[in-house]
Image 1 (cartoon, rainbow, N blue to C red):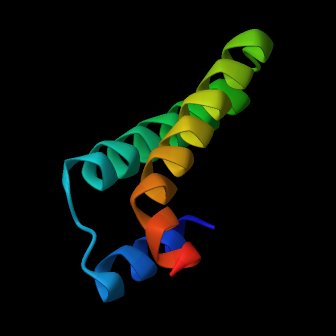
Image 2 (cartoon, one colour):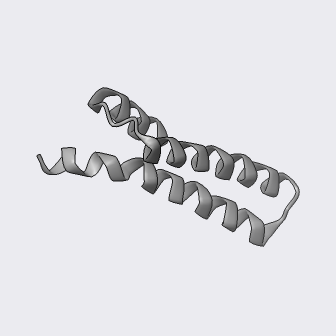
Image 3 (cartoon, helix red, strand yellow):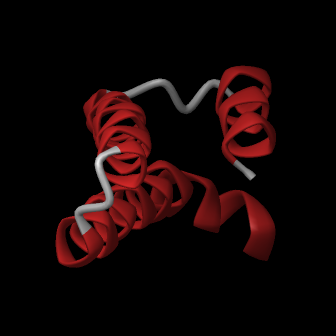
Amino acid sequence: MFLTLSVLSIVLGEQGWLSLVGASLFLIGRVGHVVCYLKALSPWRSVAFMIALIGLLLTAIPLIPHIWA
């Protein structure tokens, strides 16, 4: 999903600060998820996953007007 949203952001010219923050949160969340998975930190793994999910949503928000057009 991240790759699709990122490519759409580039193609549609929506590379603002919100997309950058979303992509950064996604990266931080996924790296944190892997670390928590390897160390078996069960509640923190869910937190890291939610951070990554919020990053995906922030990346998708600027694309919403293009969907309705």
